[in-house]
Image 1 (cartoon, helix red, strand yellow):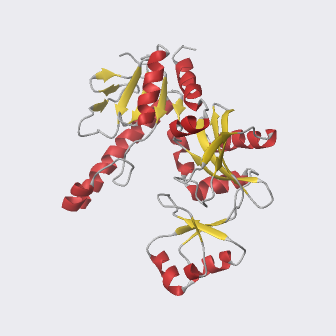
Image 2 (tube, helix red, strand yellow):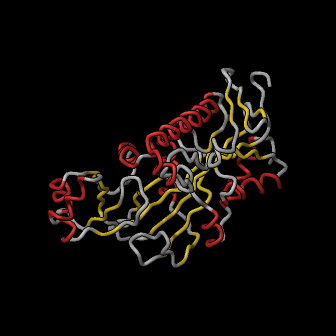
Image 3 (cartoon, rainbow, N blue to C red):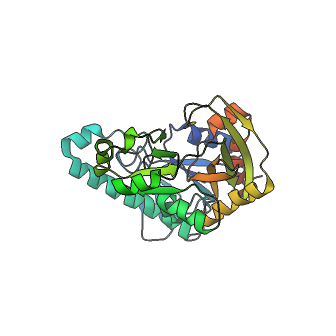
Length: 316
């Protein structure tokens, strides 16, 4: 393939067994667009990937990809803790070699994603936004841009946590994620409990008592806004119902602005209302799930997303 050419296909980066990858591929086919799945969960065991020193010298499973029309980055599966990765046996046998192999895998995949971004391929989402997906920088960037966020502390310092907790009700959760949000209690502030901070830092955040909102923004436009009704502090796995709602114009503008601040073409934003009624940004997801929300709320996030990808391929 000569330099500067495109395949006309849309590249889907993630596991071929991921329901989101499969549904997007199916819908792109219905739009007359070829979808090429780069199975990162199967790489390098099964997926074959080669990059040459030509900027668009990219070959996956024997097929030249060059510059695809667009790229949907669902997941790289680039570490032993990544969702769907089963590396327990390899880690038990030789953790150092296993981590080194994952480092090599991650470096090549990130190199590929960055090369596509450098070539000007529309990326959902681009590697340049990755560093802003870490919550300690994400929330501070949003706050610096004048957007409402909850008062937050990330710390392994017991005394800092006690000082922070003196300001009112506080929720706590992992810095990266993977466990449910809980409310901080007096028992959690004992020396014995706070000693656990020596093992890992924790996120402490003002507890927001209002409704949960999930908002999807795509290419600078709000395509869905949903209210998640739940009696639990953490709505995940505790949704009672999900309803489509209309956002006030100023909240919709803030959601679009948040995407611009973080360099995201597409995201699902989690917001929660404070005691003052103001929705505050909790998180912008770099690869938001949407099929479950469509099924529960009757929205068409998948349709909007696929049509956006298809337009880059000259369809729609």
